[in-house]
Image 1 (spheres, helix red, strand yellow):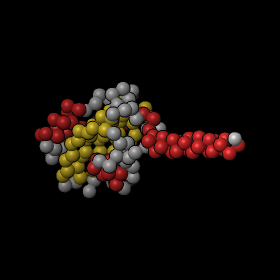
Image 2 (cartoon, helix red, strand yellow; image 1 turned 90 degrees about the vertical axis):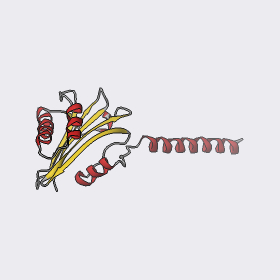
Image 3 (cartoon, helix red, strand yellow; image 1 turned 135 degrees about the horizontal axis):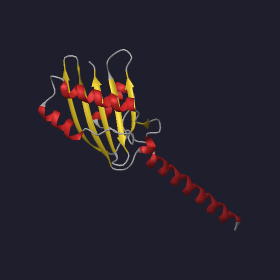
Length: 160
């Protein structure tokens, strides 16, 4: 009987370990392999969580360009954004300043102007946000996430 008890206990432990390993892989943060995420990863050393549908507008001119994106996630990703904070007035202003600059630049296409104008969020303090600027250039990125709509907005100043 002791021999069978050992194998039963061993089997239960093995099943639990395998189950935990599979669960851990399923719940791990996956970085999107989308071109948008890969580009942000190259420029800012951090990708976007996987599982979104995107609408994107990008235009470039001689001195750089702008990128606007709206990502709608299949599930809430608030728990993945632990370093983000509720969008301060400064973060919202940065987003709006970049968006206004994009809309006023001389090289935006009419199609992209329509995308940005139709999808521009009304930034408020319910958004959580993250903003970064590069010290050695004018490059800047502002990301805002609307928890209630499971939607992320990205506004980036591209520098060559």
